Length: 280
View 1 (cartoon, rainbow, N blue to C red):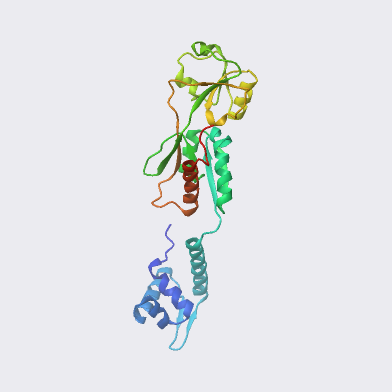
View 2 (tube, helix red, strand yellow):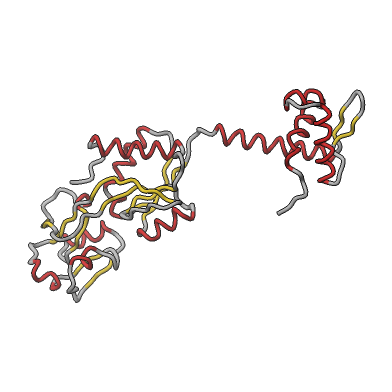
């Protein structure tokens, strides 16, 4: 959109209006006083209205000049505030449901102890998480997809250990004879077994899936870190299935904003020290 204003000359006008003095404006810009006067003249021509009334002793602003000076002053205040902004931020996070229900609660605990910033966390599918990041609805996502592009970069965090859980021991040779409790159409069962169960129950909650397994409704494959240490479940190793790699993804900043870097540091340091365990 073309407003008609020649923005190149706004600084000369702003300083002259601020000091009501051509000479002081010229000193600050390190140019000749005649150059300041010329720039303001060109700005007035681009707008089509007089901004300053000149005299040998005094500089006065027209009503249009006062309005423009006020608008520039407000803009200066806003940009100064942005450049100095170091106050608490709200970090918007998208994450896989299983990670949120177990591992990420440890992250929230550590982050709350160490950071002044706030978190807003929502669970979703890998595809929706990526879309939300690209659309700017979230700042960070934790997902199994390693996204490396001009727009997004991913940091490897850890590999999930998977487990087949059931109420009673499972005969894996007859895996299709058991009801499958799955999170989505991309569940681990479908990657591991060609022959599908005749009874598949899809539930968008890892917690509910584990609860139903305990009650004997069916069997499930879940990340091991989602299983609490208790004797109500039979836990069997899953063979032949590649362990998912968990990544932390953000937009491809040349340098991460301080609040996002703080979150990244807490996650990485926690994993390194064992404070944020990725396994049971």
